Structures are given as structure tokens and as C-alpha cells.
Amino acid sequence: MTLPEYRPRPELDHWIRDHGLDYAQAAKLFETSAEFVRLMCLPFDDPARKKPGRRLMAVIVRVTEGKVKPGDFYPAVADILAGAPA
Image (cartoon, one colour):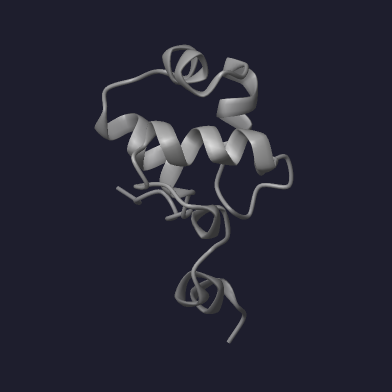
């Protein structure tokens, strides 16, 4: 059995899962659409992934009590290097 390739995702995806929410429930908390939440939670290497604008980022930081921060929408240097060709 082959394990699926690890594709790092933004911290928002982890926060949503840790709180037992689906994208529609999270969307209500963040005052946006479920589709936009889904797009923000895509793996860092997905070209369809979206980042929140200033207003939405402020809502996310407030709702998550600072657990999700603006920098969390960018991959960690280690993750970038791990995906770089040898």
C-alpha cells in the first residue's frame, strides 16, 4: 500500500478540522462563503488556493483567537525546501 504524498496546508485547515467544523460552518464564523473557505484551505502547491484579504484576515485572527495568523497562509521554509528538486 502506497501512502498519499504529503501536501502541506494552511493552518486554517487544521484549525477548522480541530474544531470539528465543515467549510459551511466555518464560513458562517468567518463571514464568507463555504467555497472561499475551501479554497483557502487547499494545499500550498494548489494553483487554485486563495489567501484572505485584509478584512477577512482580521476576522479569521479574531475568531481563531490568534491561532491562525497572516503568516500561516504562506508555506514554511522547510516545506518549500522539502518540495524542491534535489
